[in-house]
Image (cartoon, rainbow, N blue to C red; front, side, top):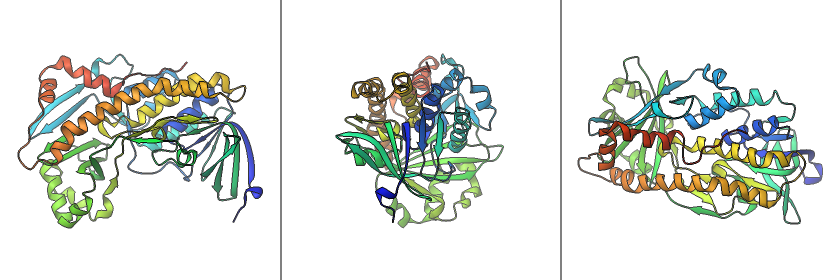
Length: 406
């Protein structure tokens, strides 16, 4: 076993823990400003399934501001310009992105590994950017109450990275925020999500569809060759569902999406169905001297609206805008770290508040319903008046406080 004095030591201006959307975008933006930055990612690559694939208009606008949009959209992806629900067999159009004040008036669907590879490829063009894979952070290095770096395990042995700033972008199970002892406020979520894929045929519906029946909700995302399916269940109910049997579960899915037909047999075992435990939480304080948390490490989002990746990107842009100029010259104080939280906490609170409202007023009653189900009045109202479809499209597509690259 390696001991601390045997560790290899590296020095950088900013060490980012986690190579997800927040970490990779921040690494790119800081290197673009001339800040020496090292991103540590614990996996060997970005190729992991069942991650957020929605690239919203706000993120696409950032790509435009970076001059990367055309190249980015040349990669395989799907686009949707509307959001629809099928409730009790009736299709209701709820969101229309065509009126957004952005260059892209649609949501793009792209595997997250492609998005992260794209960012990494362009970040490597800057000499100040460094990415180290297979580097799993295990602890913080602190000195006189200030975080001065991290310890990581690598195939070559222990690695100590000393940095003027450590940024935790390592997700909702962040080891960095745990080691920092930052207080997490659990807001709660009444559901979990089962993720699975079923092949797609040319005659299938082409847009993002949410399907609702009594006690059931299914979201289907068009991924070109297959459907990425998210089946919502009451929190903690997976074992009960398994006891009913896989055949009964397949029947539930066919009842919601009859056009899948015999393709539902592609779900051969429960191993083909992955549980995603939904959490909604946020840190009371996103920082301490020498350390800042962003993205899911600062605020875990519900899958409602698919906005988590885009909130993370907005965090990265704000962090780069606020800290980048000072970070080139040395450490940043807690006052500057507090500016990041001040900038991003309000849109986080508003987004989580809206998600919790939908969870408690719509999703939870539907999942626990045993009779017929009808659309809540606000959904029927939105579907009836095309003008009002712009509101949910703006909240989903742009959010409460979009950030722009300086």
